[in-house]
Amino acid sequence: MNQGISMQFWIRVFTIMMTALGLASCGGGGGGDSSGGGGSNGGSSIITDATKNPTTCSNATQLSFVRNHIDKDYLFYKGAPSTSAAGYTGTPNNFFYDLTTRAQPAKDRFSFVITAAEAQAVFQSGIGTGVGLDTRRDAQGRLRIALIEPGSPASVAGLERGDRITSINGATVGASMTAAQSNALYYSSIGTSLSLEYQRLPSTATQVASMKASTFTSDPVPLATTIASNGSTVGYIAFHEHTAPSETKLADAFRTLSKAGVSDLVLDLRYNGGGYISIASQVAYMIAGTSTRTADMPAGYTKIFDRLEFNDKRSAENFNFGFLDYIYLDTARKNEILPSLNLKKVYILTTGSSCSASEAIINGLRGIDIEVITIGKTTCGKPFGMYQTDNCDNSYFALAFQGFNAKGFGDFTSGMTPTCSVSDDLDHELANPAEGLLATALTHRATGLCPAVVATGFATSAGTATLSIQDNVQKRSWGTSILNIR
Image 1 (cartoon, helix red, strand yellow):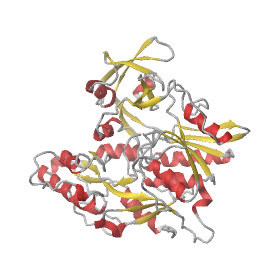
Image 2: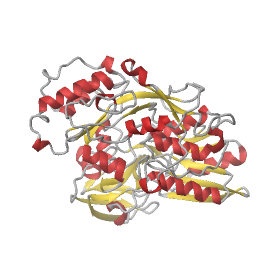
Image 3: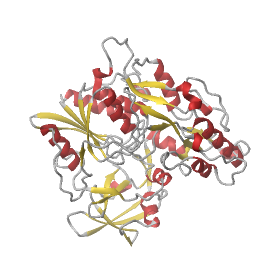
Image 4: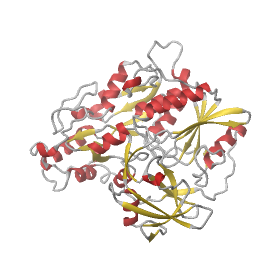
């Protein structure tokens, strides 16, 4: 685990990680080789118009694909039911869930399937569908808006972080939302009208916001700024999703902070459910910089960021993923060298929604002895990753590997416990120095201690905690949930 990483690994990694490879077969073939090229070995095959291929994309053929995919690629294939494709009477989607999350909920809370069009929109284009808000319950059990996507219908309607939702389409919100309320708030199809009654606390006056679900472009890095604290300049970045559009926005944000001469960084991952591991490695590099290499390393080599280990059928494909120091995904700026802050310590804000690639940033930095001080709540606990594997009109995301840092640590299925425990503060906007998580980070930076925090508008749980994992995928198709590769 102590060897360096050469650039030859990047070619392999991104071939595996990127979306549809356009292979001809819809039935799960395509071969694949040790470089991660195709088919059952982690690549993607897609026929975009299934109606033109009724035989290749028949229900029976798709069921066969799912069975083969799970048997070959799924990290926990040994615990999957032995149900044959020929003996299954349901849909390919249900077959996939019956072989993964429904069969082994204690091991797998994360595998999911969406349409290939949805996967393309989310990961590559940053396009969301719906009204563009997320909610949490505060300490008093009130349903509060935690996040508003800029430019979304909710934003245009004037809703803000912290607003209390009291009624959804005329139905009063109680201790838990009904299925109808949840569907209306999160799953509305394009053009569907939604009416919300809300209070802008501390006022108890009720206002009404009317909107229609639509598509919109999400902003993966909505805030990057500096904060004056104790006579020095602290950088702050709110990073919500590891999608392709985040790559250059992150590079620009770190470059701005570097020019500003920040002495410390607060990276806000409280709503970041993951995404491309390549972007996680870039973020980690831009934090650590020179610490990702040793003086005797040849050019193009870095220390290990994340070692990916597959099931025993694919152990020959295990490999070390390094710290990526240049732009890869954006074609207009491809190969541009990334800036770095060269920090030895970083503050990261977390909640139970901080997942996967977000956790990989923390784990990867700790693997090379960067001090990571986490503020907030325990992370979601996903040391696993998956590939997008396309078949006909669907994109399947089955857990395929577990990630380990340079010290060999990757066992955090119960989540990462914060250095300072404090709940999300819904009474303040993000980047406000008075906001609970950020204020705690600044206090810890100044004193080395975790301050006591009095709960008022502090969140305790998500408003939709009872939803199944696949429901949450649909709910947060616009960005910051479990739609991740890592």
